[in-house]
Image (cartoon, rainbow, N blue to C red; front, side, top):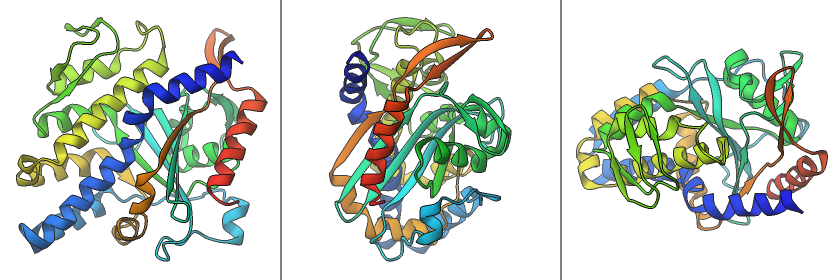
Length: 324
């Protein structure tokens, strides 16, 4: 009973921000595509395609899900439900090739029901790391084997196919926030981090360095990693809102440079076009869910243990969304 209440509470608190992570990224690209037709024409289109080409990174040695062996997803038809694994990568470098996926969300998009569902996965979830032969925190899968191992591990945990991924370097959010002129957030609690002070309920404009401090604090948050994920989503939402402004369109080159350096995906430019054309209706109906468990220490290491009944609940929900 307590677990379900906690899940529902997290869902209500985070729904508006979490659900827009993917959708705002999609809407930004759509906006650029529209601008290509009426603002600066071919040059914008060419720059966008170049950026998405830089972002593209295929996944290799995937463990194919049985459902996809029977029927591969076809986004060109606009009829197939599909999934996207969204990962916020925490590392010390300038790219997203390595590092732990400290934010993980599995998004399902169903064009037939015109519905999008987002399930947040705790970074410390104790599960099998596919291809590694061990059980560990799920956020270590990306560090061990990049996007392919992370996708396979989530696919194994939730027993649904993981078709696409988008990984974002959380450190590069500093450059992204600066590129869009900063973002404004309302902190859910008061705290200090890296020399900056944030006060609960007080709208605060954040430039890049301050924004990075805002999303990196975890230990002082009574909600732990759930609280940090909420603040990360606030920053991403604010950045994506700023991307839709006229000033951002005029500064599209700098923004595209930042996206190209900070994001990776196995979606091709053609597949992105298909998604924009065929799946926009699913953005009208969005729901947020949280895979929830309880923390425990094993050999001096903290893990999040997800009960079997909770995993079954989420698996059933996802399979319904994917018509499996």
